[in-house]
Image (cartoon, rainbow, N blue to C red; front, side, top):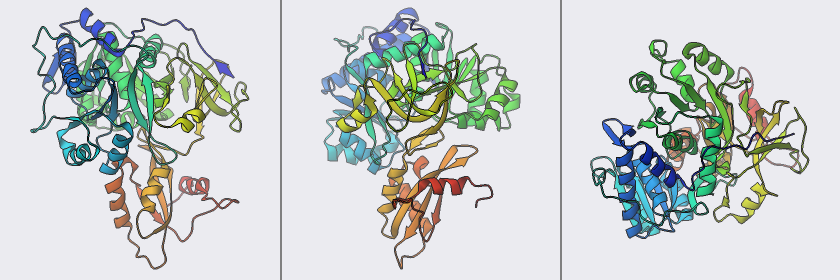
Length: 519
């Protein structure tokens, strides 16, 4: 089965920098960014982007990469757009990563400059020195800078030349089955066309949107559905430094939020909060869900209480990132992530060869084709060749397409766990566990969880005579893995199950965790 809908698109900008310039031209005095007590109009936003971009160029950023190890703040959007305007490739990185995780990504990305939060200085600054990163900017806190210093500099202009559609825009790292993250190269053209594809499917109202962003802006979903969505329509982006359900519910009413993008764990948390029944949802037009499957019961309860839908979509970092979405005002099918975006073709193919196209209702691997698909992985020619074949991106996800062209995700071909919308590749967890002296063998798998969707569990066998110390193992994981990757439970076992060819049988381990009445 193959499906590709209408190809009509609204305006496609050459780059996101051109998009921001357009928003400033249309709505110069309108509010653009709000974070706590700090706020910027579109004119001020563009001045700050221009000023910091000029600074980055002076320190050699043009044609290089700029790493952003930042949480949510007013400074993060400025830094992201400034990196683009400087003719550099932005490299957003999760600031909760450990020094080990950061070290690998920074070593692979080889950035010419790095912007990082003051609160992560202790783990970032030794890496800046060790990797000889040429220019480092600490932001926030009591010891860092604010990037809004240019807000009142009326004559500030963007440096020229502006980037072109063919230039690399973003290097976004995603997990790898080998245990090592892979950097996904996305050009400005791929990024910009995906924004317009999303706009065609989920149209916004120019100059009349309040978008709440509590998702981390280093994540592709937040960039696509918050940062870029709001800039495209000249809307107001309300940024929360971190997710707190009570603060989200207060903001929905106080900030008159019209668009709410979030992961399933957020919707579950809000529904179960004591303030949810008392919250005013009258301004909300649509909620968007992504990053992980949305439970049917969550969708039903949300819609019944708020009167607004939660629209689900499907994508991945390699896809720019959005491939499908349920349309606003269109037909919703329980469990479906909707039809493809315009100019996007989705096919279901056999899992063995990936060459045989399957029919309606048949289950196989999802492959996608469209102008938003990545250029490839940085420094990974073999893995690029495996993912991109004959013009198609092989997603590694298993699904089916119905007679109306709606996509349903059924499983994952690749070994991955999704914890609250974050991808965890068990191989990386295995490698960290293997490094602990007492461990003989280890196997991490995902287990169903009513809140996070899944959590990581690890099965471990110990070397003969080694003391039983799960606390030490957990602490070792915390030192080497971001919090969401740390196993929620470590099971010490005498032996791990094997397949007929002697490999650790992770299917059997997952089945054990999914079984009714398990411990």
